[in-house]
Amino acid sequence: MWTEGSIKVGDSIFHYWVKHYEEPSGDYGIDGGRISKLMLKRNGEIAYNYDRGPDIEPVDEETALAFSILLKEYK
Image (cartoon, rainbow, N blue to C red; front, side, top):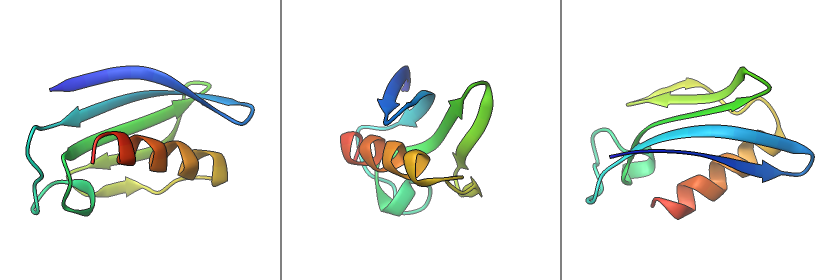
């Protein structure tokens, strides 16, 4: 299932897309969880991307916090 939304962290607003499943995946999920794909964009620029493996690590602390919030929400 795909979920799209926005999250505000500090002064930044991130637009996100998450592909998640009902059950965790040890093969494809982030940290063995339910998220298999996740993209965070800020001002049209990719700030983090995971597509069955890390592609772009969080570019700063606000991005890392947004990532952590979404990881907890879909864990």
